[in-house]
Image (tube, rainbow, N blue to C red; front, side, top):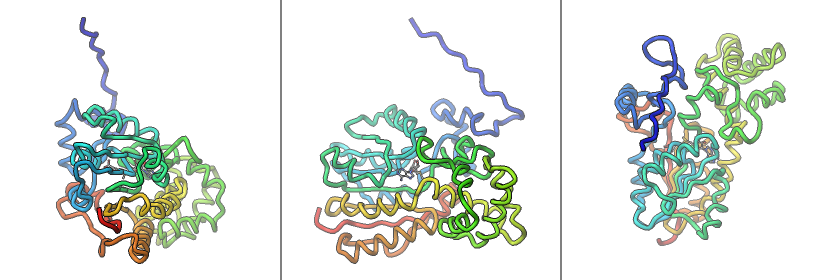
Length: 345
Ligand SMILES: C[S@@+](CC[C@H](N)C(=O)[O-])C[C@H]1O[C@@H](n2cnc3c(N)ncnc32)[C@H](O)[C@@H]1O
């Protein structure tokens, strides 16, 4: 007997089209509503609950996946790069997909399994990429042939107001990629004095108005603890004239996100263990989204080249082409660098 069909009422919203992330039920279900998703993509936007992979062709060329090889997608996200790389490793090859996000990772794994990526081809693990040596060792591997890291947060994280990543959407001031670990940004803010907050804004985001913004945030915090993205945004905007409006707000959110998730420490640890995780002749590609990340990658690759650990590294960063920039404005801040592990394959 056929199971009874469950009728689900669509979410209620005002107006013709849903505006809130959770109301965009068609965008959350691309298999059922491909036309809606296509229209959103054509308008240069990212459908709710999804992520558009950046510089896919450039990354494929750099990593050059071959049948039988071992790959690591250190930041699995929506699996956008993985679905392009993994078929080229088959037959025989395997991809390890890592991510710290316990909310999105099971969704991505379910989607990839439903698309036919079986456990012998795709290993999914919730872990920080700094722990890559342990992941490889646990599977009896001494290294991988190709490694990709696409840093920062995904559109699913960014666009979901409940996670507090975006200053454009009101929500709790959380900003954690792994909400089961560490403390939300609101709790961190409550522990900072003005000097420390200003230091975080300078070190993590190169914020030129750091002192003035830190003062404004802490004044607001003294009146009432800042617990929402809207309250933080208002406190930054109130930081007198001369502050670069939206740009400063974006930089403040970025600086707190980096602090809350200890992103620089994770990246530095990853870069330190990286050469040891690559087989001879192995390739690595890293996508960064701001200067603090790119500086660290550039420096580590140059040091690895000097030490003879890498045989070649990118001389210049690679940027998204004009077509991609038009189709996906989120690619505009992306910088891609690569390196090749020394030794013959
Ligand atoms: C830009 S997204 C990756 C998108 C993916 N390449 C795609 O095309 O779908 C970055 C992902 O990296 C994860 N991430 C950030 N820092 C991480 C870390 N230290 N270890 C593992 N995953 C991390 C985030 O949770 C997020 O899902």
